[in-house]
Amino acid sequence: MQTLFLPIAAPDAEFYRRALHRQTQLTKPPGSLGRLEQLAVALAALQRRDQPALDNIHISIFAADHGIAAEAVSAFPQAVTAEMVKNFAAGGAAVNVLARQLNAHFEVVDVGLLNPVELPSVIRQRAGAGTENFKIKPAMSEAQLQIALAAGRAAVSRALVGKADIFIGGEMGIANTCSASAMAAALLAVPADEITGAGTGLNAGQIRHKAAVIQLALQTHCQRLTTPLAVLQTLGGFEIAALAAAYISAAQQRLPVLVDGFISSVAALLAARINPDCRCWFFYGHRSEEKGHQQVLDALAAEPILQLGMRLGEASGAVMAVPVLQMACRLHNEMATFSQARISAGL
Image 1 (cartoon, rainbow, N blue to C red):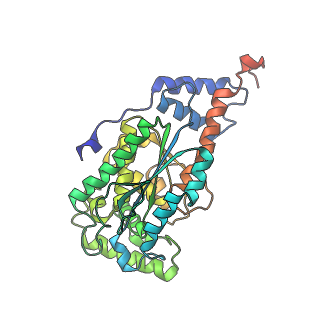
Image 2 (cartoon, helix red, strand yellow):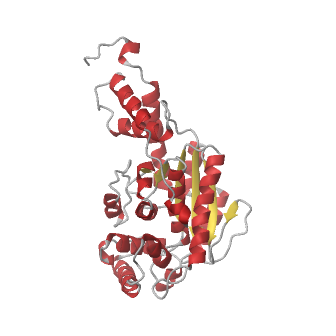
Image 3 (cartoon, rainbow, N blue to C red):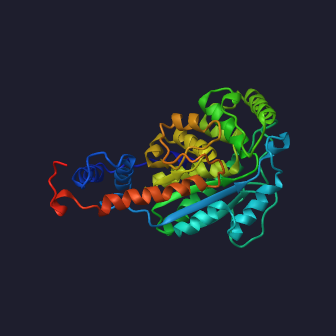
């Protein structure tokens, strides 16, 4: 667990300065490309390149089940987690379609399905057969937490072997919005009903029930929730732990991260609370329609790239944002400068 606290480098100041200067030389009024300029400059500083690029995309989906599903906090049965893992493996999910469009490397990792999926394309690094019901007891043991964290670090190692330009993590696990909402409430010190949303499609009465379950768990475990890792071990999911560890590991190894929606952002918030220097390595793909996402983004001082009304998870919103980042890079790298185009800089 000590690896979580290893130092993280800051963006390269010299590459940042050069990229910022180049933006002033391109054939456009200063600032006219808005956030596209900021994104390109940030990537140049992180990648330490005069020509930032996102040609090689790595996507890891972490899947696990949740004991809290026994409290009727999801609109879907727990069996759907394993069924969706099979769908990922077969290439039939939304994120598969988007990954193919980008020619991205895609993988799915079982970090704790209730019923393992025996498919050669599914990576198995299981912390257990789902977490415990955190309404009653802590979600996982310290040993299980260690395994889930290691699964996230291993995914980043594979991304680096593949020479990835950016890491995207996704999640799949019925009832994991309940776990993420509980963690967010604990980390942000807000009541459960302020941050608990519909998840997979709950109605108003079901959302109230879900918030009540979370609030009871927060009261039951209040003496334990003293550190970010304690919050994760008590209320979290194996896939959320893997995401948080992956985000920190990527930052430690100078690999930019593109964060997905609500659950992934809670993992990013947890990562930032554990090792604050990782935050400068994060981009945020989109703002989810899930109720608590904006509060989590605010806590991270994060400005998402897209807002499309999505709330699917499985890294879909983050992958949708990749073309915007790619276009930002191309504009930065390929536009003519005023001197090249022999245009007066008085534009």
